[in-house]
Length: 238
Image (cartoon, rainbow, N blue to C red; front, side, top):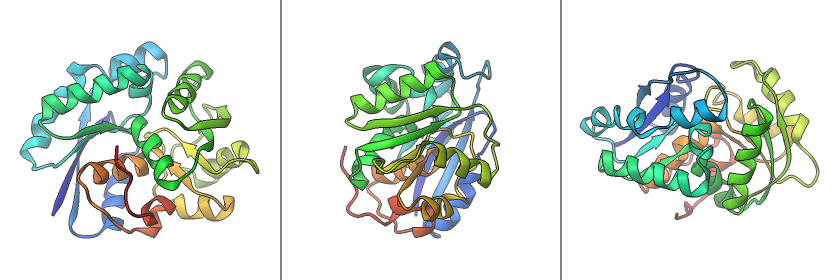
């Protein structure tokens, strides 16, 4: 049994994780701890506070006692707003507190893109423009080039049609993959249909977060229902 730990902010799309766990097979367990979100906003200041050391370390003891082999901060915005170096320091502090390998959703997107061998990506976000720009900067710092982006607050948290519309709005012939970076969106059930419609890999926040935890635990799991990312081997090394 491989146990993986996640620090998830508040309550939004956490039911993606039981779905993903089921698709991974019986020997992988996903354990979530919900962190305090404070101000529920997509402002830069609120996102920086969301990923503060105090909020993250409060949940690590439960994950350590659960037998988790790795822990991932399941939030893109609460990591990339700190910048590339700041996000590295965030996960280093989390690793020290947990005594486990650690990462975040923001880094998961970069490593997942490298795993798939894609560099030119489109980004469909639910962030304000200033926050979306920080994610684009983060991707570039990791060697991934966002060629199209769109910020929208109008995407329904559960709707497959809305997700497809967002993905289509940023897709283009020079785009190698589409990224949907918000762990508050329910995406796990829609990845195969999104990839079929677009004809290219789609990386979503909860999907890459779980993949990143598996990477840290040095597990390889083939799960095509979770998209092209879960059919690629070997896993990329950090």
